[in-house]
Image 1: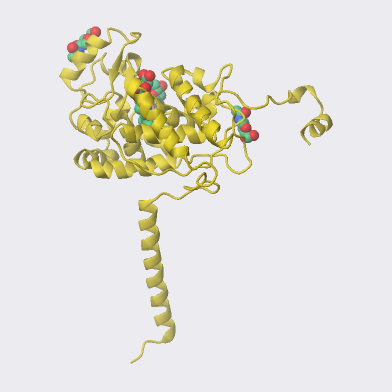
Image 2: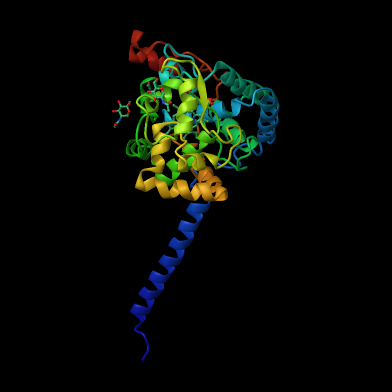
Length: 346
Ligand code: HEM
Ligand SMILES: *[C@@H]1O[C@H](CO)[C@@H](O)[C@H](O)[C@H]1NC(C)=O
Ligand SMILES: *[C@@H]1O[C@H](CO)[C@@H](O)[C@H](O)[C@H]1NC(C)=O
Ligand SMILES: *[C@@H]1O[C@H](CO)[C@@H](O)[C@H](O)[C@H]1NC(C)=O
């Protein structure tokens, strides 16, 4: 007996939904969605040399001062997490985002490197590439030039006209446990896998004593005793200006050793080590420790997602001529009436 037409139709309908959702899921996993206004080929006509200029310039910078790779990753993270990837962290202010205690580790040298890149790029192509895009490209290249994955990022961000000192308080803290960390990132639509992969950036760089002293005194039983002894010597008190490597195995290589550290209770921060305690994240730590290719894949996914947080596009914001200042200080709005303001703007 023949199948009634309508039930055949609905079977076919269900089948095609399953099929298309399979492809959608597959695509989403391979490549995160691109935000409206950004594109992988944004400057391919207008500034075709952009990416090679940035990479070559940083390659030279890193032969002089390789620590800048880690610093560029932090600048990227702290710019994107606070008011979006809009270059707001780079702006001078009184106080600016850079003056916040959580940004105190960011040196002027690395901000100068970003503005140097901006200068070379603008000399080549004119003032069409934003400081926000250059920050993302520099962090992307810092990963690759340190031994990490090579990958493309969507471009076309514009620079902000303001910044938010207050919003810097939304950054995650090293003393917090995984539940808190996960909430912090969930507020930016970043999931558990994104978090565990992105924090893998702690495969590079250093941290000041006060950021992990809470684990030395009183001694955190979840810290390897040998590491605790070494850190005790480095940090006689929480006020010590000394620093320790975030990755005790390969501090200058972007690899998956950070996760192997965690499995050996050799993570530096509470927020690092607790990823191997919390049931939601422990499996991912083990997976990344065993499979560097998987870590790289998930890191790239998380990086691209974070690089698109609350971006300005189209005719929003501006393209800054210098990364630390907006192009034109606006008239002080409160001192004039609205009619005059309208005349000033139009
Ligand atoms: C739970 C989330 C995170 C917390 C609590 C955290 C916290 C910290 C702290 C306290 C430091 C040391 C700062 C200092 O002492 O100067 C640090 C360094 C660093 N962080 Fe994170 N971070 C987190 C996630 C990330 C992410 C997502 C990235 C990048 C994708 C990142 C990249 C780095 C790098 C590369 C360093 C070394 C900086 C240097 O040597 O200059 N972190 N982090
Ligand atoms: C910065 O400017 C944006 C867009 O005009 C505005 O929504 C935001 O509230 C401003 N932020 C601060 C801290 O002034
Ligand atoms: C995160 O850590 C800070 C500093 O130790 C603490 O004051 C705060 O209560 C913690 N946050 C939560 C939600 O537990
Ligand atoms: C580190 O020093 C503190 C006192 O400053 C001491 O209580 C603790 O036992 C030391 N830990 C190790 C592992 O040596």
